[in-house]
Length: 169
Image (tube, rainbow, N blue to C red):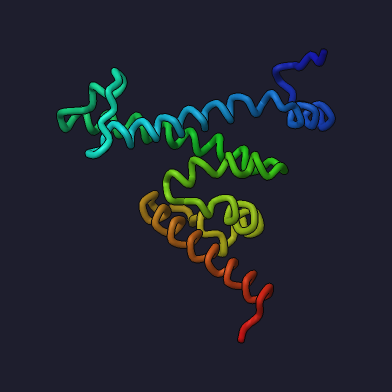
């Protein structure tokens, strides 16, 4: 057993053992599965065609304030799900990357896996990285730049890959 002092970081060997421990994957997988099921529940709850006869679908928001609170809570926990997905995308195994991409796919941001590992980590903190912003840039401008820029960079990278693989005619 390793005893850690509160005022010291892990040494490199202990840190590597911690990172290789598969027990850390359990809460990540659990959170992503729970949010995916919650996403499906929300879709069923607000569906106009699918009317399940179950108690979990009986009560939905009715007033404007209830809709705002409902949206805030679901969005907050959905954003936490993207953090779990982000951690899984960094693992080597393809199935971790696939499960880690689920929260991003739910938000139509499925290029995250490719852009994060091949773009952001390569160009981090440079003007080429669309998710890094200059000091003083407000969050709304940064968000638009990040969403637009990551889509464009992923598209360009995929075009280059396909041209290399198949050439032009």
